[in-house]
Amino acid sequence: MAAQLKPGQGPLDYGSRTWLKVLFATIFFILYAPIITLVAFSFNTDKRGVVWRGFTLDNYTKAWNNASLIEALTNSLVIALIATVLATALGALTALLMWRFRFPFKGAYEGFMALPIVIPEICMGVALLLFFVNSGMMEFFVHMPWPLNLGNIIFAHVTFCFPFVAVVVRSRLVGFNRQLEEASKDLGASEWQTFWSIIVPYMKPGLIAGALLAFTLSLDDFVITFFTSGPETVTFPVKVYSLVRRGVSPEINAASTVLIVITVVATVLAMKLQAPPKANKG
Amino acid sequence: MENWKQNPRVFWTLGIPPSLWLLAFFIIPLGFLFVMSFSDKAMVDGQVSITGYDYLTGITNYVRAFDRLYLGIMWKSVWISALATALCLLTAYPIAFGICFAKDKWKPLLLLLVVLPFWINLLIRTYALIAVFRTQGYVNKILGVVGLGPYEMLYNNFAVIFGLVYVYMPFMVLPLYATIERLDKSYLEASLDLGGSQLQTFLRVTVPLTMPGIISGIILVFIPCLGSFLTPDLLGGANALMIGNVIERQFKAANDWPFGAALSFLLMYATFGALALRYLFMLRSKGVDV
Picture 1 (cartoon, rainbow over the protein chains, first blue to last red):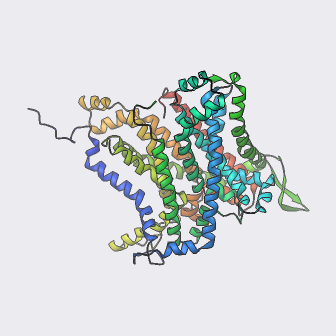
Picture 2: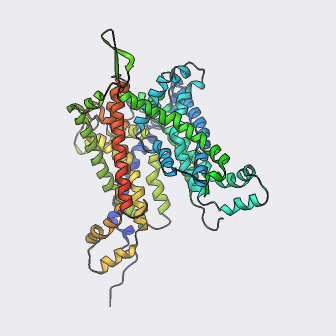
Picture 3: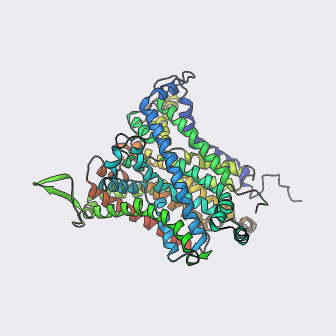
């Protein structure tokens, strides 16, 4: 009689192999240990952040009272909010265009729209720096009152965010039942009415997911901002960069933790909304 | 899908704003960069001007990019990126494989765990690595308990490669996961039934069948590695320059924009080359979309 296989011992039950579990645990440990220590040590009383000396919120108070850090964070949030609104609008238009129409050179157009996603960030950063300086936009915006002096950075952020929004919204639109649109028009609705009462409500989860994606992308960007920001317009990542170059401090840990929480919440929300609907959905 | 001529008004309303935006803030800036890469600094009264340029003077910047010094840095960028990509593949394959064979209820959580670090600011993740690897960092602390070290683990090639693997690993897991998940498991059973060992099955069935995902992952990781600036800058310091750092220097400290522009375009051509390769492989794998 053949020996019976216990559950989890079949030749294809790789999921229950010990070596794979150990490998998994090791890789996840390496992936998360630095981030977890960073967060943990933001609550540490030790100045040099080397040994654990006790729980405190002092670093957060210190970061909060650091005017330049807060200014940078405010700048980052304002830029991210404005860039998100613009990028979502432009991304939705692109998605609708690609979804609805057939037109000559569509493939080439699609390729162009994907360019900001694929070219190295540093190339885009220096190209925008060159453009802003030579077109006089740098000079023009630098002397504007806040928040208009963030204009250049906002333009740059919208440019690399909206193609991502377009991808997200378009993938949502693929599932749309075009008969709904036809029914609406048959019943006498205009193009505009159909758009607002049929297509936009359907797009909504895609729009929200795209907006959250744009928000995190903008909030996270360092390289492009580094080249397009002036001395007066420092964003949070640029500020952290200049602090990190000077060394490790618990204050940076505290500020970073705040940013991690913001982005993780936004990302998890976006993923929830993007997840394919469970079943029986029209 | 309808022809644009059926409804030109809607077509133009949708198409014009994003196209104009892309033209103004992407295509034209790249055009500026392109022109700059063929230009030189102007000479004013026998001195090199700081802000003036003579436009379209020739290909001297590109010729200079092939100097020994810069060729060395380019070569170094390529091998560091290649090594980082290889290490990403070695760590990501077991992860992707494991997730595919995990219980269904665990899959979304495991995938989220892989992707989540990717959403945390690159700068913060790099900073976290500095805190771990510096001379008074935790790795040296732990080594100290065993009586080793402290070692200087930052500001060398090792730190840059580790940083790149750490940062770009999720890019590798996702395409691998997508292809392994689609792999028909009965091929594996067939191979095992016919007497193939686990290793043979893996090397001769699983790997060839998941090749599209492997290639996709390699290119998705190699491209950002090659163009990376922040990781070599913070973890490598002056000892591990990559092409991105040289470009940054030309635009900031060295103030030689024409040369920086030429280097940027060389980097872009390399990127497009890698993308073209991916496209070719996709065509060859007959529509297995990755």
